[in-house]
Each structure stands twice: as structure tokens, then as C-alpha cells.
Length: 115
Image (cartoon, rainbow, N blue to C red; front, side, top):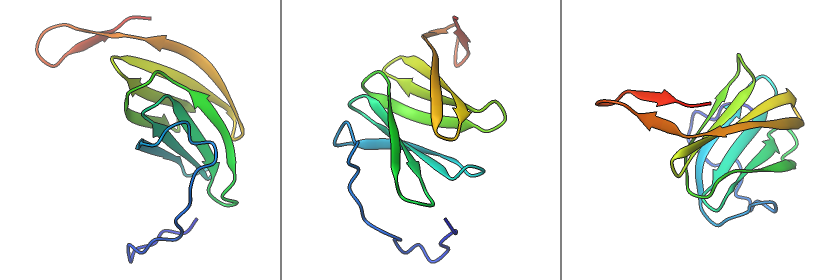
């Protein structure tokens, strides 16, 4: 997928594997051309941006707020209704669920994460 600097839409498409009506957060694995779209109703849709094909839907807790892909660790983090779901990318087409944990608030804006 080439970068579109003119801000024009490439395509308008509906996700067949979309487990919900509200797409909230997105993350992108640039090296492998994978777009991750998190839906409020509880799923991350994985799309190959070169072919446009939906590869899978990864289950997460309902109420997603944010989604991050860390390319160095090949991990996907979804912050959902007070917990964080973690997936690891084994290959560009295969993902393993690692864990779900709930961050604990200490003082101010600091958090401590339990495993």
C-alpha cells in the first residue's frame, strides 16, 4: 500500500469479518502489510493491505479503547474496558493469544501491571 499524501480515499469497503458496527482503533504492521482494526463489540480484524483480504478475527474483551502493534516484539496490545489483551505475531498470518491482564492504578498517572 503506497502512502496517499493527498488524503483521498483509496477504497470504501465493508469488513466481512467485522464482529461489530463500530471500528475504534487501528494499528499497522508496515513490514508485513497487515492492518489491525479493533471493534468495540470484541474483535480485531486482521487485513492484508496488499491483497485487501481479511485474514482473521482475534477475540478481545468488548469495549476496546486503543490498539498498538509493537514491531520489535511482534506483539499486539488491545486496551479493552479496563484490561489489556496481548497477542503475538508468529507469522504475518498467524497470531497466538498470550494473556489478558488488568493494570492497577497506583498514584497519579502511574500504573502497575499485574501478570
